[in-house]
Amino acid sequence: MPAQRLSVVVTRRLPAPVETRMKELFDVELNEADVKMSREALVDAMRRADVLVPCVTDLIDQAMLAQAGDRLKLIANFGAGVDHLDVQTARQRGILVSNTPGVVTEDTADMTMALMLAVTRRIPEGLHVMQAGEWRGWAPTAFMGGRIGGRRLGILGMGRIGQAVARRARAFGMQIHYHNRKRLRPEIEDEFEATYWESLDQMVSRMDVISVNCPHTPSTFHLMNARRLKLMKPDAVIVNTSRGEVIDENALTRMLRAGEIAGAGLDVFEHGHEINPRLRELSNVVLLPHMGSATIEGRGEMGEKVIINIKTFADGHRPPDLVVPSML
Image 1 (cartoon, rainbow, N blue to C red):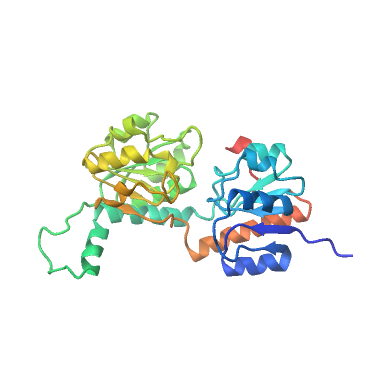
Image 2: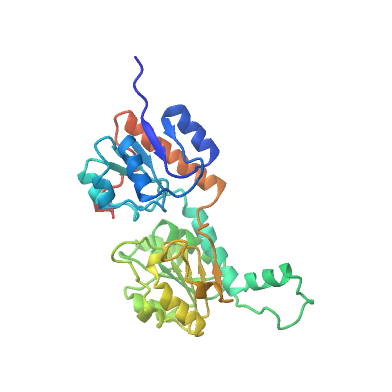
């Protein structure tokens, strides 16, 4: 008699090949409408599923996990970040948590460089003029931005993505500086000709570009707060493709409006899709809708990792991308 297939609930639409493969392997319930599930709907899903496949927009906290019941055994997150999940409570309740690390590294680093160039070279302003039909021809002083070659780049968080950003920035002729919880090995520093700053304050005050590439944890919440943002040079720019909560968005908005920071490129925001309306009005800011990992290849690889984690669990083994509280 064949083994009973796992019941899997997926909270949002995934790439079609991923959903097709899931249906072949598991008893899958898909979110055909692709509408964000409410807290009540998520709790209901956790009560009737063996496996839940959420994504970054699904906040799953202690109170919700307390209502999950005994059936749920695995939360196979579609994405690398797990700060939206209470991993500690899940493990205490016997629920494993897995994620999809590594697959978004190159895509996110590409987007970081794109935002750097967009802000420093005023690409959105030029695009707006062209789309509005307002361009009257080339002029010697029109749309003058800044050259990134030779500029000092301060990377906040020198993990996989931070190092991928450094590799690209070196090719553009930028000088690499970084702040990290732990200093990198000498051979890695040598590869990027990178300068380590133990003091984040000192690094921030000397950089031309700040790139935020650290995860959101209790210790990184508002790491770039009002006091630290004020240390930035008036002609410096800041780029964030990591987590919005790392920057005090209201303080950043005030400083950008006052001209105390030259510009910002943001792919993530402190309150999800609820963006400070004053931030939208600024011409020296480039805002993107969390597109850092949005490549066909990247999302497909994320889906493959989710399937492998569920299939390995179904076969009675430890999911290869198991998240444990000590990792966080």
